[in-house]
Image (cartoon, rainbow, N blue to C red; front, top):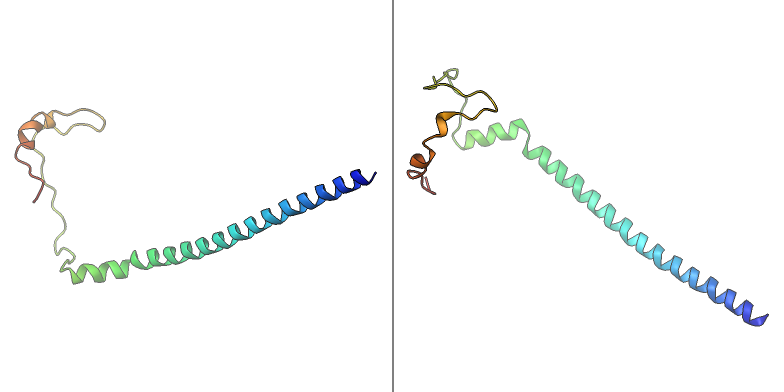
Length: 105
């Protein structure tokens, strides 16, 4: 009878120890999740600020870019324009053109 009681007590102690260890792990994970959520929110705010139209317009002006004074002009394409999804003959001389291309502008 005493052996059974000691065995039950050891089982309860081991179960309690495992629960405590798992609770410590959960607490660590919850703190990491909170830190990453804070980081996500700050990065989302930074992304919103960087992609605002006012900032992009101001940065473009700093770089010397401006809105066009005239509307865009359509440029005629020589030859037949291939339909979407079809293979056109416009790329038949790609090997000849590729020889003129360089890695740097």
